[in-house]
Length: 315
Image (tube, rainbow, N blue to C red; front, side, top):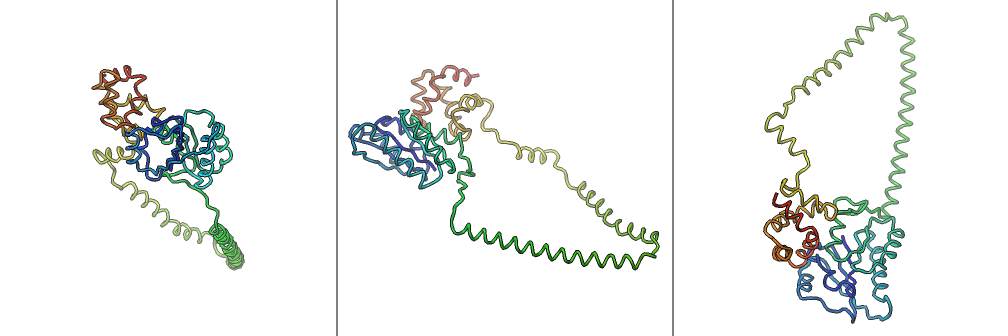
């Protein structure tokens, strides 16, 4: 679950790049004012087509940093309300860093991530690369303090009492058994010790034989040889995300995007580097294939090292 707070005065339409990549559970809060109350038509279309919930918040108040204070106020309120998730401010203003550091310390018991980014696609890339502590399969493992906890504690206490009682009963039984054994031992002191040895060996023999049989049955299990064995081995190994011809893309983007995200775009990036001869052609290719926002984001990730990446694509 992601919560994104957009400082529209600061980032304008560019800050919403990647809004189409959000999920249905994500929430976007766009703070606008008289100084910044317009978005480009493509951006509005992407907002309309996004799965995420998008809310516009009009900051009517005037004054220095008025919008910043309202963004931070809502940030803290949403953290306290949901107590889990990825919370990010979309802005170029570095003044938010102190507020984010404070929230990170104050809400240190909650499974959350916080950050400031220039656009939504950068926030998503960071979120995928840095999973939240205490999260498994995308769901936060939060310990809820409610009446059920007291019930569980009482049950544990009762179980402990029952277990303790059973242990006491077993102790009593053990004492009785030990007394009975001592009595039997005294009665049989004159029994010939040598006559008792074969009996012990006979009793132990079946167990030893069973052990040999178990080992024999284990050794007789069918072995996975040939194609079947190779198939099983292949299933247990980690899947390879792409062929050797595209591994250079993973090496280049591994510090910026998660493997899962690179998997989505690797083939398109490889194709783009093969057909585009200039950065302008690369830019157009991404926008035509991936759409306005995602295409722009991919172009920004690659255009700085375009020539080197192109050489690797054609090897």
